[in-house]
Length: 440
Image (cartoon, rainbow, N blue to C red):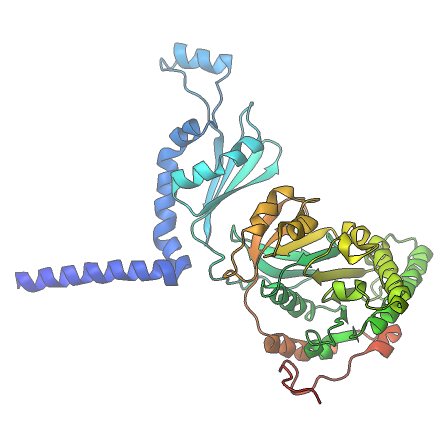
């Protein structure tokens, strides 16, 4: 009987250990909630003061505090660490709000994040300034970007589209009212198309007009035709469509001036025109020319895009431009257009210069990060935030067929815009999304 009991206990312990090890890699959220979070919280509580001291995040106490410690408490004067205001656990990590003492600044804490990560045994530590004198340590217990799972509550709303997951476990959202114009860069097979698919999937569920410019004969965007208000598949069509958008922008300016509004969101709902999102699949196809005769067309397109990028925000027209490379080597007007694109998302690139084109003027510290994204991590990118910071993100894998299905389901949300009817795409064929093996 004793041998049987010992065997059962041993078997149960081995099974429990194996289950914990399995959950650590196959169900990291469950493992973190049951094992990782309590262990990290306890380690943080016990070693907080000593860790802050060895990391140089303490200051000498004030004269009054030192006098009270020596005279009243009869104890040795010790350096003062940041005071803990709040500690809370999440499904992916631990959040700690700190009140910085006089003499410390957020940059001091940011410089010590790598030491804090190793001291507390977490995957990563990020620092966010919540308000003057307060910072939040955002600890991530495991690699949340290894297998991306978007929270269920992340749904598109009011021109805000959840696109990816940040490395601190929060959702990266594309907010068109805060960042109206954006640029997405990335090499082949870097996940740039996956990012655009997630974006189109979210936009398709909102009452907006989607305008596509896919000069690769529509091989990328033709599958989404049921939800598109317009689609240009050749540079000539793109030039005409860009001119129409500029004319519409000027007409909307007249409407705003008539009602004394600063943008379309200040107009009454019954008078507010539908927002328009222009999706450019490959910007180089609009810049590069092969004949001298195409120079005028190129100038028309570039001029129209620059005008839209500079002024179209208040008219409710937003640009979403993608490309493998976007620099002065594309031709006249490229750098001027790029300067107007506030939002930047840079996937894996083939050279450092491409990463600098997208990030050097807004987040120079993130340039080396973009150059070190491995090819096995498709969909990983460096993205800038509306507050001027940057973060590492990764978009969940999604197929063209899934996005095409969403576009068909929300076909009824296509707004009726007469000026875009000449550019309305033809109904997608049953073979949309299937590569053509032969040319008729």
